[in-house]
Image (cartoon, rainbow, N blue to C red; front, side, top):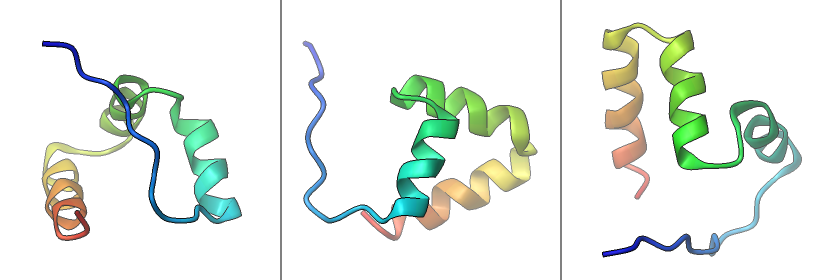
Length: 54
């Protein structure tokens, strides 16, 4: 089974675009960047917050 990316359905502001450029283009690159910057506890808290926005 192959996953495909989907386009975002909401507008992205300039700071969000800048963040995306710094983190990386793919979800894997973004996860690697974030994992390098945060502790395990901070990662869990971030994931929990992100889940509330889905």
